[in-house]
Image (cartoon, rainbow, N blue to C red; front, side, top):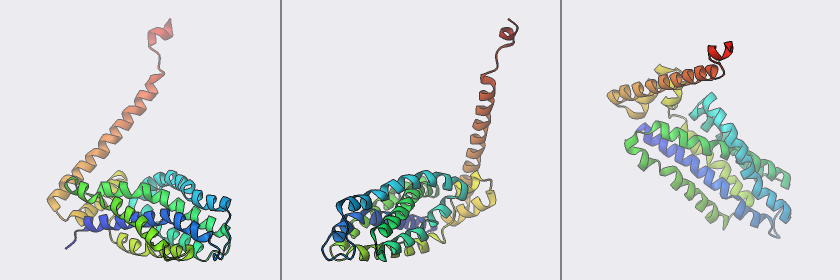
Length: 248
């Protein structure tokens, strides 16, 4: 029987597959858009924008993703990208103008930026050190597989068909992510200790290991809080002059 942390690793890897497929869409799609039979006429300049809007939006998504991770949690941030991914794919699928394609690629790029930052953080926080190396390779492998699948499908599907596939891929990803628990590290950082213990138990099932790991996470939070307090005190005392100098 697959343990919960293995299911979580597979779910995260499906997210990487979505990212790989969506990122690779531009290459076969632009060739299809510029074909004489395409329903939308795309110039070289417009094709350039189609290819570049996604990574530009991904930059903004990456910046926003960091804030969302700390405010809403790892799992919530990851799952929140699923519906926009589907909306982006549908928008491009039914596009009747190049501007609709622009919108779809901007939304997809933003989601890619958010999820590319979130997935490694979540995976690193839920996996035990002894399996982190083996299961940590799954997202990279499936991400590359997503690129390969997109290029292979692009030999038979046009830009619209490829976009339809990209709209369907987030569905199994969302279904796999739904039952997995939130990152225990995030829950401890928010002082939700009971929820963190439950999350650890769901992920690993070993109560003795769970108690030990919970103690480690809780101690880490105390250490970070202590370091933050010491930093604040040092900052306040930095500009305080010695009494002898003040009286001179």
